[in-house]
Amino acid sequence: MADTDRSDHLAGEYFDAAIALLRRVREDSGGAITAAGRLIADTVEAGGRVFSFGAGHSSLPAQDTVYRAGGLAVMNLLCVPGVVGVDVRPATLGSRLERVDGLAAAVLDTSPLEAGDVLVIVSLSGRNALPVEMAMSARERGIRVIGVTSVAYAAETTSRHASGGFLKDHCDLVLDSAITVGDAELTTSGIDAPFAPASTVVTSAIMQAVVATAAGALAERGVEPPLLRSGNVDGGHEWNTRVIAAYADRIFWE
Image (cartoon, rainbow, N blue to C red; front, side, top):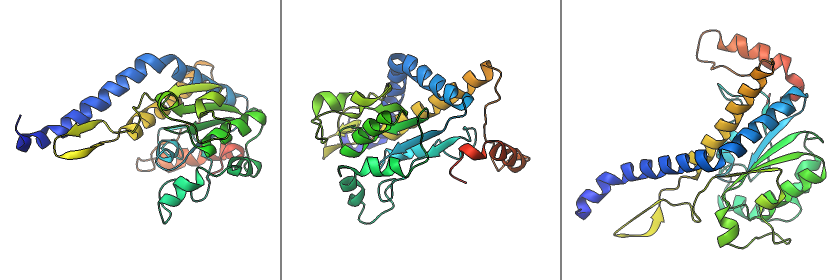
């Protein structure tokens, strides 16, 4: 294939890579995803709280479940100023804060999370101090932890936490995104670095699969899942107002 034709096929190669990863996750982690969804359903049915957290780009899949049309109204974002997203300057600040010891405990101490609640922690590498300590501190408080991470990092990199452990080592359930170390799916001649990350696509799909499972599990038990509807369809605002009012004690994004 001529180099001039190579770029025309890169989009297709990226889609193929992402689809292959989604299939792998479905086959290898389907059971864990079902277990995670049922754990969230258990928590909602018992009157508990559900939060998700991620730092940097790992915050995107966590945010995608919060105040989301078609999603559970009781999904909340655990915010850490300067860490969630890349909306701080310099953008590198978030990466540095993720490596600060002790920050996770301070965040949990001031959060609404209580024993019996569920915290979903998204961290691609699972190696930095913040997600590792977040999981450790949460479990010490009796909070159930679902970790969404790439297990490959634990085999191919070293931990940045004093314990030497990774996120996967401190969770009740681990959902493996199967993303390769470096999070870049493509290479081509003339470009020295690998490129085209797929972690957001795959991890967002995992999160939505978990939420979908939770909604289905609640319905199986005769509990109407507290789902939000799009505000851009007729009746959506009225529907959401009722749901939010019914679950106001477990919604922290209002």
